Amino acid sequence: MNTKRTPPASYVYHSDGVFLDPSYSNRVMFLGQTGTKNCSLQISGVRMSDGGAYVFYVIPDPPTQKMPAQTGVQLLVAGSPDAVTASVNPCGGALKGAPLQLACCGPPVGPVGRYRWLMDPAGDSTTQREHPGQVWTMDETRADASGNYVCQVQSAEGWRSSANITVDVQYPPCNTSVHVTSVDVLSSGTGVVLTCSSDANPPVESYTWFRGNGCLTAVDRRTGATPMGPTLKLHADPPTGESELYCCVAANTLGSQSYNVTLYGGVNAGEPQLARSKRVMIVATTTATLLVVIGLVAFALRWKLKESPLSQSYGLAGTTVPVS
Image 1: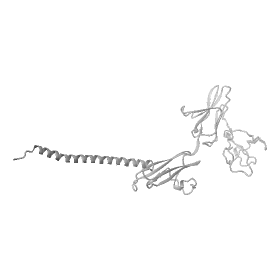
Image 2: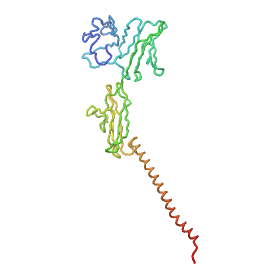
Image 3: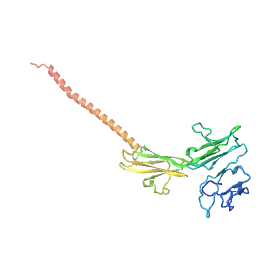
């Protein structure tokens, strides 16, 4: 019984009698025949622990390291004739984009009875999903399929529910991005902080930063790289007119994804640099306006001072009487 691509550590049945699971000892009989399409297996003394997915493989000689992927046959074992039992295959967690199957069994439903699956039964109408039938097969599992599932069986007595089944859809890092912000640095005056984020399940285990040629896809990133966390602090902007390439690689046990960002020196270096240039422009505009105002005031005062003596002399000239 195994759904992985590699041979299991033990077998329910093996034609050579090797690596047999002790819990199936003297309880299993192979009913198939060589050269036919019959691969039937009989299990006697069925136990609750026998429930799960069973996969049949023809192992070549010599054996290969990988087996073709199979969903197998689902065996559901109910604790009592009236119990509703549900299972998920694969049981170790689903992968995004891979097939997922939910199966359910219960007491005979009769002519008016039916089966149905509910996702997020305790949630509201925006998160709940319903699927009719005993089996719910997802050919390509999506990330939003994670959650709790319940199988319900309708009979003359009403609905009966199984225990909750939790589905955890796992996927490598995706939607990776880098946020750029500027900071004040005592030594150089300005600096840049690069913050990397990514969505992954299981969560991102490491963030690794590269610069320049290290961001090229042809470079082997497994060597010479040290995980530094999601934040990279640069103590100075690139020189004016120059550019620098940085990339963040987010990784978990399922894979990795990278994101490149280019920093440009000068006023066109992106949001932080544009913000600083705007502030400079505001200061320059304010200063220029102030200088214009001061110039106008000075011109007005100068004109007034030049006009005042003329008016006074003219007035005196008009009112002065010469002495004879």
